[in-house]
Image (cartoon, rainbow, N blue to C red; front, top):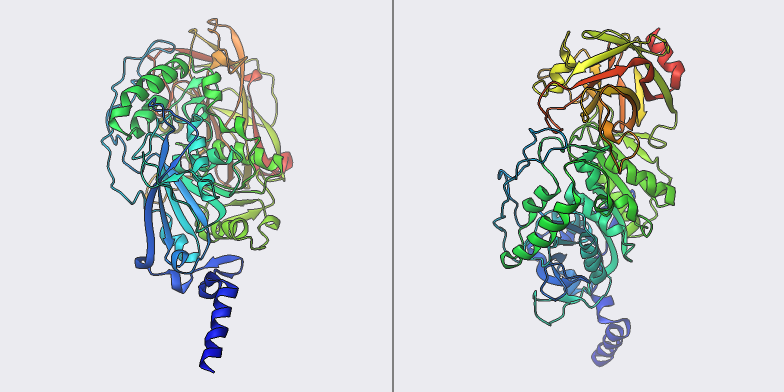
Length: 607
């Protein structure tokens, strides 16, 4: 009998396969979400390794294909039980340290079109040790039945190559890692050796996420159309370096970083091999960037077009969950909307989550969990049938968004607002187009920040037009646009526009949504073409039309909506010597707001 039982066990073990018999751990799903698996909770049982994945490019000039430094965190059961799991992958140029607060920004106090003083350049002191690149994501996802992978971007940390800040190699690097995760034989145990390593524990299903630059790279990878990248969740991603460092032909800094530009970001992240930096600096920063970035005119060109992921979306098929803050004045909310809009037009599964705060801010974890559960584990949890847009209302927590059929709100329609004179105090703004023939003039002076100009009762440094006090709330959803008819006293001028809610509120109880509704900037020299500006003829009027940043905000009763037009923005633009005059033709200037309920709703609120 004993021999018979042993024989049966032998046949069972080898007939079913050792891994089939041993594998006891399985993902757990409830309500369409991956749950914590008790056997995977103990981090001391996780396997952590690092390796290098070979790419298809050589950007550090050594004649060899660059390899990316990668780390892996996986449950021990992927080794002992043959368990295969999908992968959550995050990539970043920041993992090995940055230039920190080094004085490397451009001096912005000079005349428009004039060369700026040379800026300081800086070398990053690399930090971080092997084998751990990052600890991000692992505590959330490994216990729920995922493997977590990180990689350092080209030219950062122990990854070879050169940073290009939006160049092709920053898309092809994560592509190579994903190819390795889906079975390609391009993984190595060392940066220069020939010993191979395979991702035998991967199911071949990969999802990516990250915030800011780390949110850009999932999109970069997705635009390659690489097989195996099933879903991405970019959070506040920079989707176009032109839109990050320029605005409608104007040189404009990201909020909080006055004087930053693409070459500054290059210096900020360049933490790679010190012996390769001279080549990269000369080739990328001091040649390609220096010749292409054009701080003199701010025009769009082929250099910037090559760093705009909207131009690369044709191969993309990964399911897209976008996340952004409407009051993110660093990576502004247009970055996410323009990609979301293109993805849904392509028929890619797409959803967008917007909150009312600033930079960063992921969707609620359950929303992320459901997204990855659907596309990486293949669980039919119905995310495709859910509302496409989730907006956090002004008084709510980020974990409690309100669902809408889509963004912009399908019930929103454009409403035109026209101006009536009042400078240097405040003019009016309403629905009636009154032919007054009036022109009003402001005098540029960067010494006064926009917040001070918006609160001033009387000043020549801005023009401010106010609606009547709202008798009922107005819900703005979508992209506001403006057409300004203007003349300048000089051949070049900044043009800045803020849409504000007044009275201005400050203090401990004020919220980020209380004052600024949305903003926009433009170069009047680019009134005819974003690619080619032309000097303005002093005194000649031009029509300048452009979009303001996307928004979804309910302006409460008791407030006034204000359109503020000024020139240099102390927080964002080049700051020329004060004195340039901008004259606005009120009859030729129109603000268009996307209002839920359309004109009838506005009429009710203004009556």
